[in-house]
Length: 207
Ligand code: URA
Ligand code: SF4
Image 1 (cartoon, protein in one colour):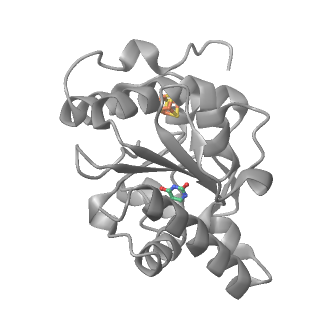
Image 2: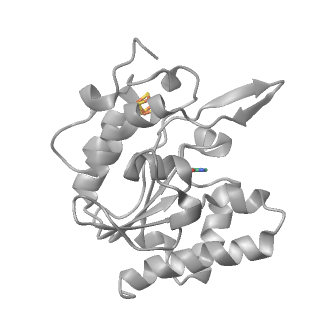
């Protein structure tokens, strides 16, 4: 990691989402760009009131270049629909923009990004928040929670509870959709995930 200095040198300080997305493939802010197929930008309306932040692209996202289009995305879509949130109205992004993985034969197995990757990639997330200006941030899982709240924040203790960020924005943390997929108590954990998303929808006043 040491030869990498973080993304700030690549993040445009002006312009909108188009400019940000165009600059993203140039990023050499950490080592992850060397192994991934492509960078996966955030997607959604430039003036979305809700921003959902995931962890990092998965195998499918890395191949297709879009956020949450693999198995975790399908589960998220289902949960958003149940919570009465229209996916097309929210801005979806990740704390880390390149896929980190380990090879096992032909397969690429997800590897959790390290604290160094999360902080290296943070300038992109900061800029997305500045540009989109969501009223509410929904944090999906521990990696996104670390990016948004810092180390020390425990999703398991705080999930579904309204939080306030230093900039005055509201936030709600919940689990990552992949953890629901892996759960041995799928029905219960899916329902709890939907409950947290309903809290988020409620904070926006249903509008
Ligand atoms: N998991 C994430 O956190 N983000 C994606 O885009 C896909 C899977
Ligand atoms: Fe840049 Fe983030 Fe990709 Fe690292 S993961 S190269 S900081 S975009």
